[in-house]
Each structure stands twice: as C-alpha cells, then as structure tokens.
Length: 144
Image 1 (cartoon, one colour):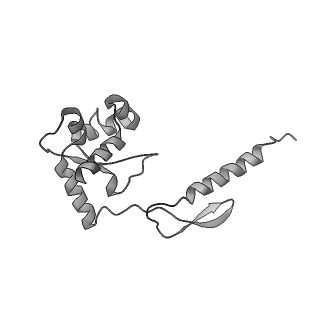
Image 2 (cartoon, rainbow, N blue to C red):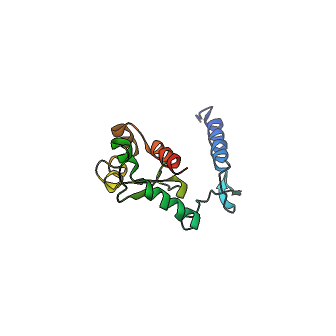
Image 3 (cartoon, rainbow, N blue to C red):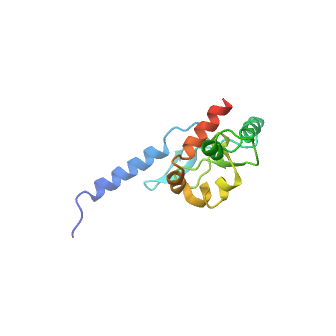
C-alpha cells in the first residue's frame, strides 16, 4: 500500500494551525461555544460583534454622517455634506464589522457601478488608488 510520507504530518500541522487561529484573542469575547476539533468537542471563544444599537453607536454614526462622503472628499476635496450611506469595512470574506468599522459613502460610491459593491473590494482599490482601510482611517481621524 502506498502512502505519502508527509501526509500525516501535514494534516496534523494544519489542524494545529486551525486550532491556533480559533483561539486567537479578540477584542470582545462571547461565551464559549463548542467546536468539533480532532473528533472531540472543545470549548472555543467566539468573537462577538459590538452592537450597532447602543447610544454610543448611534452617536458614532451621527458623527460619521455629518462628515460627508469619504470617497468624494478624497477625490474632490472638502464639500458640503449630502446623503450618505454607512458602509461596513469588509475584510476576509463577507462578515460585517462592528459600528467602529463604518464609513460614510455617497450612494454612487457605495452601491453604484463604480462603488465598493459595484467594483468589489480589490477592483475598488485598483480603480481609485486607495482602499476601504484608507477611507476608514480618514473618517476616524476626522471625528477624533
């Protein structure tokens, strides 16, 4: 019978890496959940998203909305605030962050064909020369 000599070692290394990634500390922790690792149930801390419904979150959203549109600000300079949509920073897939990862965008730069959702994360950065992290940093710096 033919077996790959490093197959078992590689599999064990992958399992250890996955377990290490699951056990990384996060900013806020939810109660432990049970996860099946190596065939047995183990308690794993699950990261919890901060609630967008608190008074603090609402104040933060109001400050962001008052800033105006971040892409337009970068492209055209300071301008009068207009209608904004708050966009969650998305990294590593489709998960949403908490209210601290929101950035104000105009409807065109949010959902339009040349917006974040129209071009996609990578296409947006390639088209404009800056990415969502840059916009988030700008917004957080402006609101202090």
